Length: 82
Ligand SMILES: [Zn+2]
Image 1 (cartoon, protein in one colour):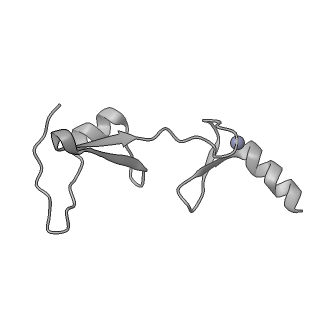
Image 2 (cartoon, helix red, strand yellow; image 1 turned 135 degrees about the vertical axis):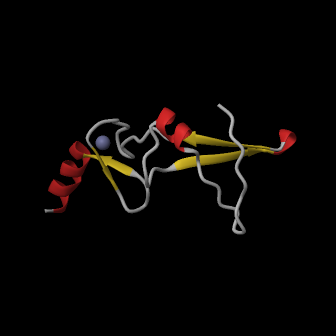
């Protein structure tokens, strides 16, 4: 897939719906932008969310700092604070 998009006056671009659908990118999802200056390219990568404590990929709660915590670790932390 290849698409042409113009940046707006603040540098924003819209990821085309076809790409979002193909990669199952939902609203408010965190993506990584990286740059390769040698070929004047920007790469956009979808992040696979994992628990910041144990690395689990399931039953995740999104934290305000854009990190994730699984329910098991959440319960463990919650018990230590009580
Ligand atoms: Zn965890």
